[in-house]
Length: 217
Image 1 (cartoon, rainbow, N blue to C red):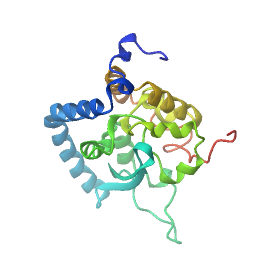
Image 2: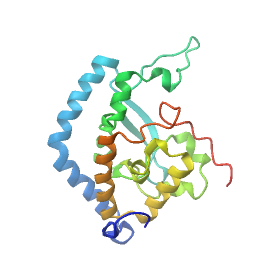
Image 3: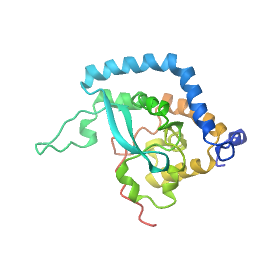
Image 4: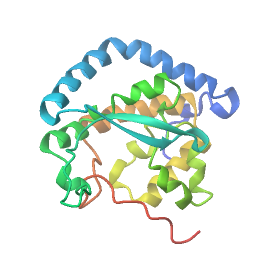
């Protein structure tokens, strides 16, 4: 493994099965529920007051094996459009409140419902846009060999500060090395990354530039 403690090899899902990953997710949700539900309630009220309705942003994303599901997040942008009715760029629609919401990662809390439904895991490659699917190389497409996650190896190794190629390389590495120990390690590092607000956006971007495919295939 690359730059992880030896104990992260414990419980390789390739050996014990992904059913154990699902069980781990449900146990963490059960233990964290008393703290997470009140936080979701507070953020729901704040988003409604600051940005109006709808409170949630829903979008189709590819999940495990590329199967499509509807992911939910707290809305962090306005619905501002130009005279032709086209949505303005992210940088113009992202409000100061939305920036704080994203930097704290509280906008991701509704994805816990996707985890509860089995569409996502706590840890895994982030589910990206459906239109990116035909742009992946065969190697990059291996990121869908595991369930998508709220946080992942790429997120604790740079998040949006990473370029697309580096991000996909981290995702594929995780897919090949996913284990119980590694998930625990990533969750612990996620807490640190959120507290330090590391890698929130790419340089010069509100979030990340659009992925347009890899030149060399």
